[in-house]
Image (cartoon, rainbow, N blue to C red):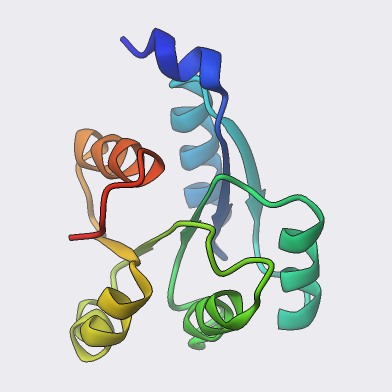
Length: 138
């Protein structure tokens, strides 16, 4: 499964403050042939944006609630306002269903896909493939 993906080696940046989640994503996505970088959002928002500018990934998987704050949402806004990073596709992967509901219009406008936790691994891989292929978020 996925020999085309293994050849492509798309770079996925996973941002989450839970080490176990970062390890799960790394193991799962590397097993699917993706190049994976993880970040626990241990730096200031502007420094994180600089990191993304220096090595732009093909896709960012981002949690909304980081360190019990809306840092993920703040980062997403900064990412989409920046000329250098606004075109990078983003999948929000979060358990904050109410927050997603409140922000759904904004997420749709930004073209951001959403995957609510807990999620099925096949659903995750499907939304990653769809997003990397340039299909609109749904």
